[in-house]
Image (cartoon, rainbow, N blue to C red):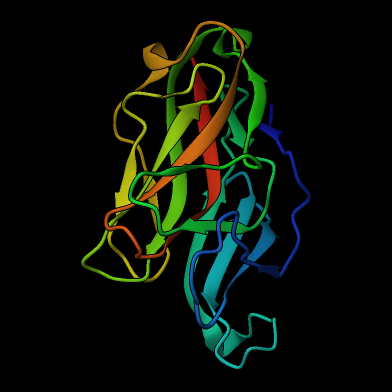
Length: 206
């Protein structure tokens, strides 16, 4: 059987990054293309090809010579893996060291109990900072109880988008009741712009 993929948005290319909190001049825009990847050498069961780069000529189109990173988000080969995409399809940024909780990128009424035989879970996203000496950090956030989810923090100091994935199974750190699951973004230094995009939760079943 094929993997079950829960999509909360349509895959569209290209996508212009936009921000929930626009704090300062971000200069040239970053662009993101999401393209369906057929089964093959890059993804055995197919998936999504993610291309990103800076819009050097400011025409709103990610052209071949502007592509800086290519990644693949692959489907599983069995029905024991569920990928949950958050609903929005742009990038979000902030310059707040205290953190900002996105009100758009929300999985509403998320309940891990709905996924029978869940064995492990991870959280992934692309992160970027405007200053390599300042980190960008994203964390899953329980918006119902206003607390971050333990063991879900992703951190990067890359000035080009970097794909990061949690290394700790945080399955038992999740609330066992329905919650609105959001994302908190923090800058490592007040006033320095950081961003993230394409947040994904992957649930593995026994």
